[in-house]
Structure formats: C-alpha cells, structure tokens
Length: 233
Length: 199
Image 1 (spheres, each protein chain N blue to C red):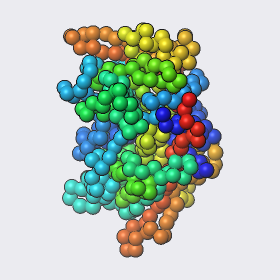
Image 2 (image 1 turned 120 degrees about the horizontal axis):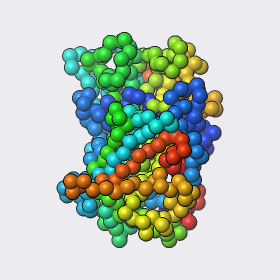
Image 3 (image 1 turned 90 degrees about the vertical axis):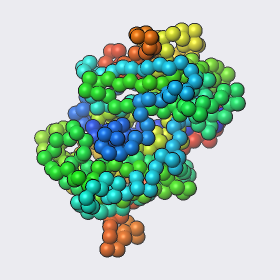
C-alpha cells in the first residue's frame, strides 16, 4: 500500500465559518470534522490525461471566439503545481474560470450590469507537464460587485480547480493580482487566516515571461498536499 | 518544506467550466452519468438534496463522487490488486451541480466492497465531495448503502463515527418503476448535520 497523504494544513486553509463572508453562516459545517484513516478510497482519484484536453483549451482568448478577439488586456498566467515536499505534480488536470474584462461572468445567474463578451467564455483547462508546469493565455478579469455587504466588490481573480494524484489532494482556490486595492477588503481572500498564506494566493508579475509587444505575465505556483514519510499500517 | 496553497470557495459561477460547459459551448470532462450499458454491476441512481443550516435548499452546490467499480476496484494506478478486475467502461468519477431546489443525482453502479487498513474490509461506499458558495473549503463525506447492514456494521470508517450520527451516511434504498435509487441528503449544518471527514 502506498504512503498516505499528509493532513490538510488548517493553519493555512480558511475555517468553514467566517462571519465576514455572510454565506458561510448557514453553510459552514458546525460539528468538528471526524478524522478519517486514509484507505484506497482516499489514495486514489480520477485520472485525466491528454485525451481530456486540447491545445485550444488553455487559450481563453481563442477558445470561445465567434467573430474576433475578446476585449480586454491580454495576459499570460503560468506557474507550477508542486507537492509540499517540492516535487512536481505531473500530468495533472488544471481547470480555470473567470469573469471577462468588464467583470461579468457568462453564467446565467450573473446579472451584473456589465457587458457579456461574445468572444469570451472564461473557461479553460490544461495538463501540467513533466515538471508540473502549466500555462494559460487569457484576458485580465474585471472586478465586480457582490451583495455580501454594502459596496462589496470582489478583487480581480481567476478560479483554479486541481485534482492532483488523489481525492485527498483535491483543491479549489483563487488566484489574485498584485497590488489590487480590493484585497484588504475582500472577505473571501481574508478568510485565509495566515497573512503569508494569503500572500501566496497573489500572483507575481513576471517581466521575464512577459512577451514584448504582446502580453503581461503573472506567475502563480500551487502547492498540494504531499505524502507522509511512513507507509500506512 | 513548502506550505500548502489555501483553499477558496468555488463561488456561484463554476457551471460553465465544471458542470455545464456544454450549455455554454464548451465540453464537459465529467457528468452525473458514470455508467453505460456496458458497465458491469447493478445500475443505481444516487439522488438527494443539499440543505443549509436553515433547512433551505442550496441551489449552487457542486457534488463530486469517486467510487470503485462493481468488483471493488478503483480505476487508478495505485490500486494494483490483481484479484479485483478493472472495468474498462467505468471511470468512477462524477460531477453534478445542484438545481434550483438543491437536488442532484448520479446514474452509476453500486460499488463492491474493498479492503481497508490493517486487514479490515470496507463496506461498499461512494466518496462524496461537497463544494459551494459559502464554503471556503470543500467537505468530504461518504455514502453507504442501507441494504448492506452486515458490511456496514464492521466498516472501520462507520465505526469511527458516533452511533447517533451514522445514519447521516446511510443512503436509503427505494425502488420505483423497477429502478433502484438511493436517497442521500447532505445537510451542511445543524442538528442532523451530515458527517464530514478530515481526510
């Protein structure tokens, strides 16, 4: 039997209940989680390979075009998916979704008074390579209002969904942009208790990967749970 | 050692990427139909509702399920047991968004029993992951089957749950129009809150 995964690091992850984020009040589990000894059920998880993605999937400026390029500032988002021992998470599915440049989601429920872009859906996916690297091309998402409190606005962000090698390594998170003035005001971002863990959700501007005459680049590394050093009993 | 990346909520707007991409002109990698006619085992529907602490339906949750095939084998490279065969027509992963009434369902097969830690045997079960707006971290639970009382009685995970709460993990079997369905409601909060695990 392979080694189990390390526990979720609750000094890093937000608590379920975070009063400033109003929706947690009725949706946060209130009883303590029951520890579960990992079995084959937790050491395995869905496997997606190259058949699950096409090269177009990773370019959000192209994958939903109807009659032209989407509006907004083109960006490159790249980084590595690693485990907490620094090992690359290879050939692993990364899914992303985001608002368009005007801060509007294509989702039918989003009724924010900002235009839909006919050439942009805002959904993408790719596989990490042999070094755990991933790369998307997109447009910079806009900020948008929400009804959590008076004059509440979400900072610009991109949603990330990752599987890693098992259901124990499953992670859904959000990537933010450096210098966003809304970050200190955002109850979701600030649901993460540790300031250093929050800072790691903010991407880093990379002049090295910025393509001249074309697009700014932002680097965002993601760290999933690694394995324990000792095998299961 | 690097620190884990913090979880954030899936938010309300994931459907066009994760659960209903086709509706928006994209392609879904998973759905709520896991079994085809070729899949071995008995076809079952798993259905339920996601409810919040006030008992109100949660219309924007995402449920993921991960399960073994009818022989108790996971379609994953770390499940290498020769005595339980893979079924090429069964991947074992499903995804569904809840509807306006908080309802979800999966069409799948009943998984087989499989080994647990220290020579124990695990009762047939489906691993369930719950995501929603208002949940900053996803929650893990397990679905067990009401028509497996003997296997359930010795399942180590069920045994680790206080007896008064075990019922929240047992999906009730019912039959209608010749179809077998198991009812599994997920209560996020409150007196009869579903058991969630620290996996």
